[in-house]
Image (cartoon, rainbow, N blue to C red; front, side, top):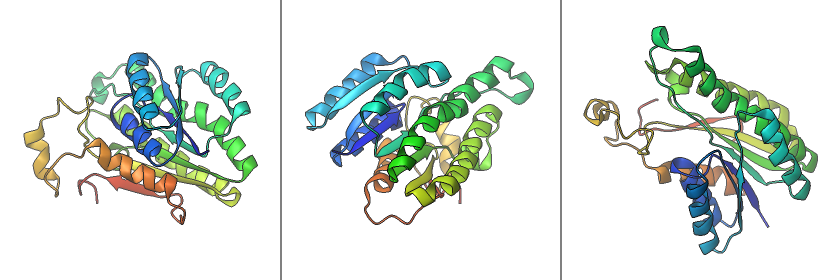
Length: 239
């Protein structure tokens, strides 16, 4: 049975990815930090689709916590797919940004990637199969005012994924990045839509299914020669 580990899968883009993969025949390991009620709701939706789902609750920014949860799970089964979607924002102009605002974003968005992927990729390479999809952002490709911390972390994920792709490719572990633009979620609901829409050639914000469909393709397609790439899902905002 195919298994996907979706890190940060309780809401928004992560929820859509977990459900899309379940529809494609994957059982799901779903992680969250605090949103256990939301995660359990997604679990129920996945089980209604006839797939199994296990919720894992821990803080990806905490190395010891991540190891204590993911490590024992990997002894039971190695996921076929890892989707790293965990991320937070603490937006502020650099000159007013606090050290805590910088650190919180880096610890979750970038350190969390190491804390989880470091464990999983070892086992995938041992089995000589696996797919890893890292959710970055258009902000990591072009930068965004007020998001030096977020942009740095998401750009860091792109660099890390590309390096990992060079390391893991010979062991049949395929690594790619999906970089969403402005997607309609709780994180973007307060953005000034009237100012942003003219910058997007497609004239609309994306939705979570726009992202989930690409992730599902990268995880499910049998004939896969896409490796070490960044796929933008942004309506043309970044070209």
